[in-house]
Every structure is written in C-alpha cells, then in structure tokens.
Length: 569
Image (cartoon, rainbow, N blue to C red; front, side):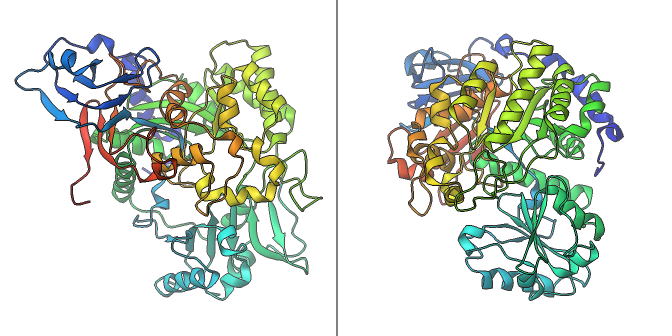
C-alpha cells in the first residue's frame, strides 16, 4: 500500500472508471418526493445561494437537499420516519470545502510516524525545543531519525541550527521542519552523511545557509537542499498499511469535527491514492479532490484520467506544479528585495519560463487542471505567462487553472489573473503567521494575501488552510480573513480584510467552483449534496475577534450525521 507510482496500483484507476457515471451529476435527479429523511427547523441558514441567501428550515431526502425554505413549507415533508432536529436559532452553513491542504497524518503527533511537535504552544524557547528532542533521542536507537515539525523561527527568535541540534545528539540524524514546510534543519551527523561542507554548492532551486566562516549551518531551504540530505541518510521508517489507513481515518475525522466535509489534497504523493480508495471502500465520508505531482502526468494521461473523473467522494483533481517557494519561509522570489536585505530577492525556481510553458501546455492539453504553487510576484508572473501561453495555443474557456497561495502580487498581476480566468487560492493564515510578513516590509502588506481586492475584481477565491501550515480550523481561518490580525494582536494589511459572509463564501462556493463542483455542493440548495454544518453562533453577528470560538455542533455529509458535539465537551 506504500506504492509510489499510480501505475503500480492500477486498481485505483479502475476504481475511478467504475464511478464515472456519477462523476458530474448534480443530484437533482435523486431528489424524491416527501417524506423527508431529515428536517432541520428553526435555524438561521446561511445558504451561500444568491437566489435564496437565507432560510429557516431544510429537508433532506436520499442524501440531497429536498427543500430549503421556511418552517411551514419544509414541515409539510415530515413523515413518520423523518428525523427531526430543532436548531433553536443556531446557524447552519454549507459543509466547508478546504481547497488546499496536506492531510498527511505524519503531522499528527499521535500518529505511528514517530515525530515530535515543536509548535510554539509546545516549544516556546530554544531550550524547550532541545529538551523535547533530547527526550525523543533517549527513546530512539542510535543511527535512527529524530524528527520534529512546526517550529517557528519568529516565535523562537531565530531558526535552530546544526549546533543547537548537535547539543541534542551526535548519535542520531536529526531533521526539523519549519512551519512553512519549505525550511528544514539538520545536525552535523546528517550533514556529514550527505557530504555537505563549505565547498558544497547550493542545488538549483534550494540553498544551504552558512555561518560566518562559510560552513553550512544546517538550515536547508527548499526541497532540493533537503533531498541532498535525505538521499544520503537512512530512509524514514514507515508504518504498516493498517496503521497508515487508521492514521488517515483519524486525521479526516478531526477535520469533520471542525465542519470540513471536503478537502483538496495538495500533498502530491501518488502512494496516497490507493489508501484513499481503501478509505472510501470502508465508508470514510469526507470528500477528496486529489492533486497529483507532475511526475504522474504521463500515467494519468495514458489511463485517460482527466480532472473530474471519479465520484462525489473521491475525484481526480489537478496537477500541482511547484514553481516558486515559500512566503513564511522567506524563500519566494520577488522583483524587489526583502526588507532590510538589499541583496536578497529569494530563491529562483529551478525551471526557465520555456520549461514552465512546456509543462503547463502538456497538462492543459491532457484535460487536467493546472494548479501552480507560486508565492512571490516574480514567480506568479511566470505562472500567469505560462497559463496565458497554453490558452493562446489551445483555447479553452472554462479551464479553471489555479495559482496556489499567490501571496505577493501587484495590480498588474491581479488584472492579468482576472483576464485569464485564473482562480486564486490565497493563504488565510495571518493569525498564526502574520509576523512572517514583517520580512517583506509594511509597504507590501496591502498587496499580500489579496482576498479583498481579488473578490472586488470578480476573481474566484478558493478558501483553504494549507494545513498543517495553519490549522484546519475553518472558524479560525475565517476570523483571520475578517480581521487580518495575528494572535499577538498586530494587523497586517487591513485593507484586504473581508466580511464574514465573503470569507464563508470562499470556503464554500469559492472552493466548489475551483473544483468544478458548484453544481453539486458549496451551497445549501435544492438538489445539491446534503453536506452542512450547524454552528453555535452566526459568524456575521459575533465579535469578529471571537469567530474562532464558534463551535461546530453537528456535521452532516450526504444528510448523515457524522459528528455531534457532546454536551460535556
């Protein structure tokens, strides 16, 4: 089950083909007459449907919305076996669609992947970070990896380095992963195994930080630098198949508890796909829109798999192209230098414009959606140029190609994105990572994470957490979009703040459109899939700085209750 190539698990392809008959159905054909299976009454329903934005009751039949209206109209569909829920004035919203995340359970620290949590809530200081790692080293056989995730340099005061990690252990390879997942740190043990020293040159698309003597200090920027270290050391241990399946199951259940009913997995590894097939077979209700890496383009094309192939639960999504680096890791490529670093513009991508153009054309021609990871304005410019080139060569009106994150833009780039019909999946993580924006200068903040201006331009914005870079917690994400204020109380680019209703739209209809699925989900509309969430409060009426405290009371997928908050929780 840990296969690394789609061609090695062709059952996944047959599974997809077997589901094609329902891949694009709206569900309206399945809406039957009364009586309903489920009725919710006395609710504040935020439908996200422009035709009927508000309602007070809904009825579900055969997994789809039968009626969304007033109490009296809906109650006419009550039968002897109809399940009744009185919302008592609570708020109901469509199921949250997280349009870009990485649901790998290795980020969950109770998983079988043997990692440690180094997030600011756990390791507030460098000394605490070292002590956590020492405790792990004491339990780990010599020569085996010690790994930690989610440290934040801005909270610790700086990045850890090889010398900090050497003080933890000289008998284990150590690898730490920054909260951006674009910066890593290794100790001397791991660096020496990789033959990294003062004369080692930076790999294309990556960099080794160096101390005042010119020696690599253990900080590895971007995947190419990380690969040099990983390829020379022992492989990471892998859990057995059943452990891995259970870890994914637990991870998805945590998302459901937060009101997330659909996810777009942007983590690329094709070995996940057969796991998702197995989870679907076992009844895991969360819906998955799977992105694949560029190395899978040929395999998908040979199998005839295009964007949208699948069913309502598991679907082929886009090809994700890494063409750019990290905002919070301060590696993205910019036209103007970083604040206080006049000679630093970030790390250039390792593709030329011509190479990117060729790749995007190939994906576009194959009938697959292009999703380009780009953060810096210089990267985004190249991404938009490549999409424009593909559309000129092979016109297609409804392509819905995307740029993932698009963190630092300008008016010219935004206008070009609108002209090309490109969807933007901005970050929503100012609450956790606003302090990372300091390195770009206050003059850039109004042009970072342009949710507000993009919506004004009529550009589709796809709401997402980029979990685990920020928490898979939609209410926190919405608060971050609404206030643009960090946990420390600093507002960054308040000009880009949006309303709670706009924020909720990005995480429902915006994400559905980004996945060609607005006909079947994204709003509480008659005939659409009955995915919805009941909240303790209305995000539109609570204090904006308390939106994150709104609780999910129920989550329904296909009209089935998949989560209910216990009274004593």
